Length: 429
Image (cartoon, rainbow, N blue to C red; front, side, top):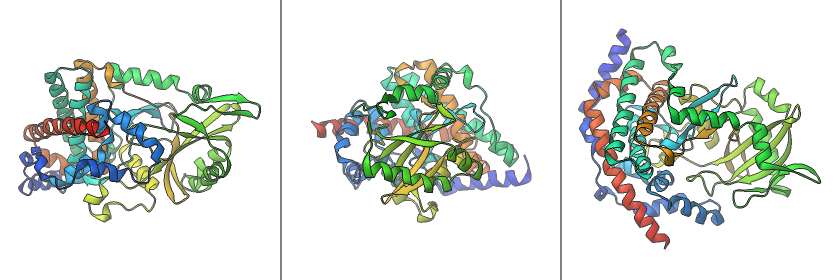
């Protein structure tokens, strides 16, 4: 190991004197001084009120669905316990279904973390705690035995720790461009990639649009999709000017070759339900060259109130999310950018273009472990790209105590999430 890398590892090890690894395993709901469900309600302010019942319905579906939509609660809870001062770019909403396949710069399919709505610079272990908990909850939803869920969570942690140790020894640029090569060998991921191959722009056009007397236009598919007209449509299209400025010059040129055809409002996800989300159907070199852009509202990260203000340097929340993508991903969507209109910030990217995600209901114990192993590698690479892998490795050490602490926390917090979910459902009755 090079001398500078050794020093980073030594500095990381010294962080244990401030926050012992075993301390990170503690969770006690008695620490809460705020009602978690009031925190959740507060986070819904500014959303489209008519869509909130749909969001509640989706969150009520299972403990894992609730967990996915309850990032504001977990952000608060994480702020109550001990934390390291070792920071990296956080995904912010690290869970099994926030990884997926999408098209990279060179047209090849990429599988990586792909949702950064809550991204921010923060303690590296916060992402690990959330991902580990998600494995327990998702596995339980899929009917995996408790021991299988525990094993999968441990595999995730071992994978993260093992790769971080390797990346800490590499030259900086080698660590930044490290490839995870086993993706096709994991059955659940190979199925995601097969789905993504079929999800071409032409397929999206057939699914979301139809021929009308005025030409091709979006279908009305309530409540998930409906056409936008009038002043709102003009505002969405006008926002493309600011979006164009956020792209690199050659991509500005590519965008200019596409012409807008129609605009729709789309309901997406679980945590994002109620946010403003528009899609633009565009055509380039003829009708058989469609491009679908998603313009997704972004507000501040749910972690922002609990971290120093200097952790957010972007003036536009869409730009904050773009920065998170670029910091953690090996390759990002070539059309990734941001805009602002009507007083709100937006992320812009291709709509589900070669994108697919995991269906957790189809996982068995073996598949869960295989998937968890890849999640560990991808999260470790993302943290190493955006932080100092030597510091993280130095703090983790051989990994045993750190893994035990993360598992202790995850089991306690999974139980807490199930309890919060039951109370959430009771509040809806």
